[in-house]
Length: 310
Image (cartoon, rainbow, N blue to C red; front, side):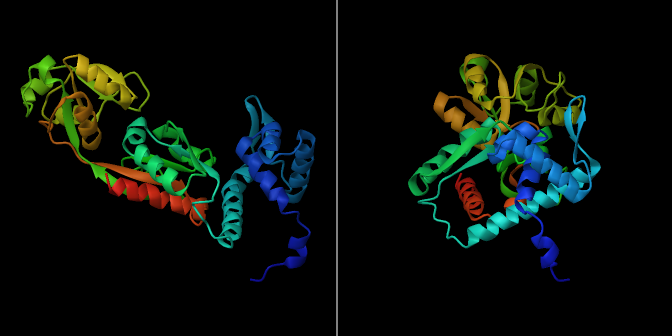
């Protein structure tokens, strides 16, 4: 089917940029600031968009502006179309990391920040000094929602992440095994750790999940054996774990690469866990809108390469 250039020519395509801002921000004031125009101009553009689509698009509710059902159906197509236009324009200009200037928003847990980002940053400063990263703590329960809302450009997530949709792209970075880490002097444990000692000593649990009662992969493995462990402390911050383990007679079971890094720095002991634990998949995630963005593609390749060298 051909393009109706006559009717298309009557539409101000800049309105779609403003529509994307309105759908994302759900606020005339914030949308105006996002695209760099005045609030009155954005209000005028919202009126034009309502006339164009024959729908209110945003309505007032007790909790602020809400998207109408019609607006919800427009969100993804508009975002994808604008990204494709941007990629089309960008493809005509050769991407040169050495001269490019851009900031990427990256969501990831602090474990991956510790493990991957030092090498990523070092590589970037060598070949792309104008590329900057802004890192955010990622909430696994909101990860795909944040990608959809364009709150981040890339993310690193754990596990299979089955809740993602077709426009959520992912690339497996690596799989991770597990190691127990402890202070041999404080605990009196000589590696390899026995199942009796594993259950007898209190544990530190790292978990990004909210809620009062948190269970980890270790608890599930022990339950199959009819056993339970005592968790003395639960924290979402992997960076706090080495100090906790170094100073107290506790055990932590954590990702092997990270455990080796911490153990080497603080002289802690490592042991394979005395229970069978399934491997963990670490994945790079992004929205399909950025598939063909040359700068985005370059950064994805850089992160993938660094992960492969771990």
